[in-house]
Length: 445
Image 1 (cartoon, rainbow, N blue to C red):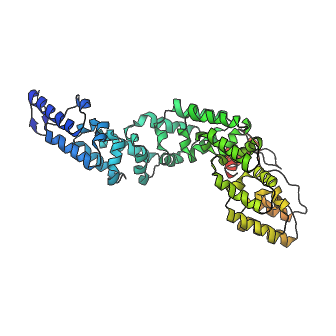
Image 2: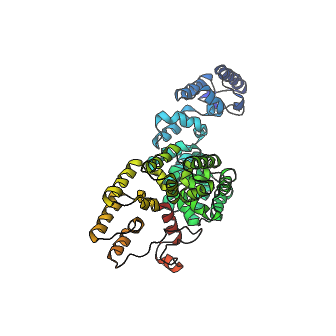
Image 3: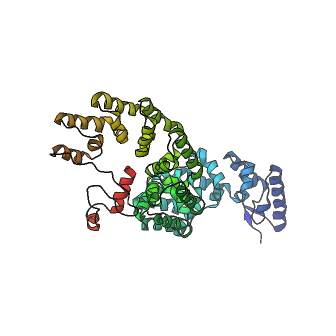
């Protein structure tokens, strides 16, 4: 039976003739028509020419069309214009439509009502901001081809089941929409289970994924496990692996061996910190692996110029690696206050290098003035390393209690605070959850 295309009734013979003419036209442009054999082509070469020219005006080249020649089966008026109009309506600017079609040409086949609108409604239901929809789709246009009842729904359901807050799913999608296309059984769950096996409670993993969903994109076998093995080979203790990952999740996806090798050599050469002590530095501040070596040397050079021996500078770095990420102008201000106003010996800075990490205006100065007004002389650790409430209690006390160590990370368990008992389960229920406390403290450290 003859088919009706663009109002022209054609028999089999005429259709074959027109098909040959259209294929010759496409070949003349450099387009390979082989994949169009099973496709119903337009009735005349003029209609095909209109399609090609429309796509070219959008910014597509002949090479782009050859990447997905099936787009030539889309009618300009029935398919292309309605789809582009809808994409522009949901936030993709007209100037970027060409790039969008290049990255996901299959969208031209989609029905706006049946296929596109339900996906947008689903994203809005996940609390993705309306203004972010276009941004999300430009990052991951393949979302428009997913079935709602498939991977997208199951990945969201699993993340919520491990403790991810439903209200955080939207921001996660905006930041890293690719997890919506990941299979739970083969990608997401194995990674979560492995992180838990390192000692990270599921709720900490959930908090981590809320803030850094791109961790879900790290390949477990090719990247994550080899990086964990690499940390151990460089002297990192197994019991602190959970703390390291909680502080710096990105470490799981870095080219870690090269970075650790470079930093270990640099620390040994410039700071006289041997590999064993370098491992302790990484345990306290894993971000060191990504810190630029020029940045590292600036605070070190500042300390050396203050006549602090290089051995003492090394000890300060081991005690408080955060020194290496500080801005020198802020260190200068704190140092000059220490010398001119407080008049203390350098030995105290060597013993408590954390002094430089506290704000001069909001903590050091006001607390020092309060001590001075009461005629109290104490160590730097005693009056700086505590909360405002605790500091007030210390000022009102009749004696200066002995100093204690800072908080410690208890792998997979509760946070131990010196001077107090480990939180019981009952106390956890009445206050913050144990994992929440641990995560919050780890992040603050």
